[in-house]
Length: 323
Image: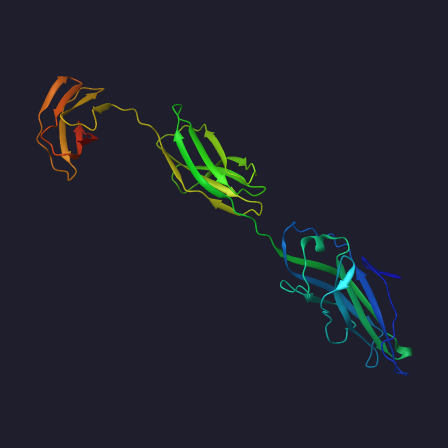
């Protein structure tokens, strides 16, 4: 029994050739308990092992080479032998076995590689004259497991917003198929391009259709834009459609009834000086206007064909539908 670096090394001597003037043996190391932790349900794509190795006491008649490089599943050696050809150098060098898409001739689950008995079995073949028996040395053994982890994407059913009477914005959204550790980040913008986070809300993670709401207390002046940034457990972010919210303007005049048939009445917060009416093509229409008061007038719409019209009152335009 010997200890090299951070490895527990067990040396096993076994004759593999029977040539009187030569001596051949195996040095074997078993390394386990790498402490790997990959997500449950992950798909293992490949396994890579790297180690430093060198030989001492070597010459043209004495050398060390790979004999067996195999993985351990639950403490049992199995799978393909990834031993490389060629003699070991007298200077330590790093070597890589396996890779991102190499499963070593067998299948692996997350539980297999997370198991305390997952590891690597390394055997070196030692060859030389009895008087020139070399030694094999290994160091810095590391294991890398490559995996993919697919999650069901969250589905955003709807995302809406409306301005309340207090000029607050109430946002509502419905989702389905939520995954674990999903966050909804409410973002707002004054120009639709530069976004700031307003709040982060964690998903319920029920996996069924779920409703959410949030009230933004930032008063809307003019136009405000909102969207959801949906961040899943891997850190990937997707975005909802943008919802624009327009500040309600205080109405200075009204037009009723609308739609209208025989006549329509205009009332204004200030004195009415001029009234004009245009069709959808922008052509001025000749209609009779009866002044009711300084702030109110009635337009006779009965001669107008059914359609869309625009009433201009002192420069302010309103839409009128003629039945």
